[in-house]
Image (cartoon, rainbow, N blue to C red; front, top):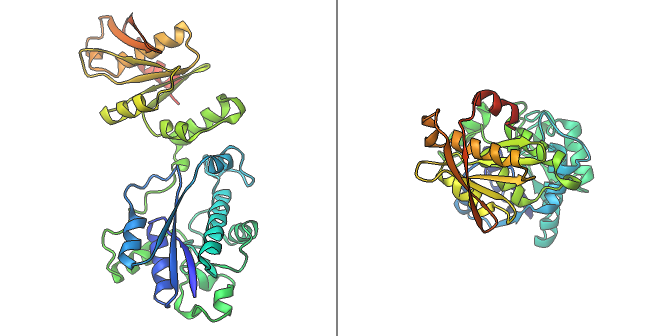
Length: 331
């Protein structure tokens, strides 16, 4: 008997996988690479290698972003379309299950752990929308949920499954110690960037100002770096360190302006959208504000900026009342 297990690499998904492997089920792990996950490191790959099972990776792309633009079941506390996202993942798991001749799907869902997507009615809705009713086994909370097809058919012993409920992670952490997982999983504080207030504000800003609520994978990568400012039809992004400076250079569009203060430690700043004189001046001043040149607050600083292939210069005075300016335009 074969199953497809959704494996994010988080502790819940690892434990769910382990519980199914202990019952002698052949498992193919599915790692969905979603654009808004904040965890670092390939925990899914390491887990598949550790347990000696095949791993299928599927990268979400524009199809996934369409969900964010207009989720059928709305957003959570920020810009997180959790129910629609879970439906998307189950549909992908169903497609892989058909490809590998798997009879059911395994997830690491815990009843009541997430307020929007992991209560009983939401789980039932997600299964129905993905056309996988009765075929999704949630080993960590299975004894609190209706019997699934693999349990009724005798492929899985329900008595060996768990009845975890709520947000506490004590049971999962105890299981991790029992299975000697050590550092094989990320800290539970990781998760979806769309639940973070600052990042969600950036996404909301893009959807409000971009034509047809357009959002591309390239835009998503830009949202993850820098300080973001909105000035009318213009968006200004200021790098915070050398790594982010390089990312901004790589992700800059041909019509974006790029700013830098030469001769000192300086952020890279890009100006997107309208290139009005006021927007260019604000971008230049913000570049100085976050550069080492800002130490001399009484002196104009010269900012170089690239408009296409043309390099220009602008001398700008100190950004007066910088804290209030930053607060007014910061996204």
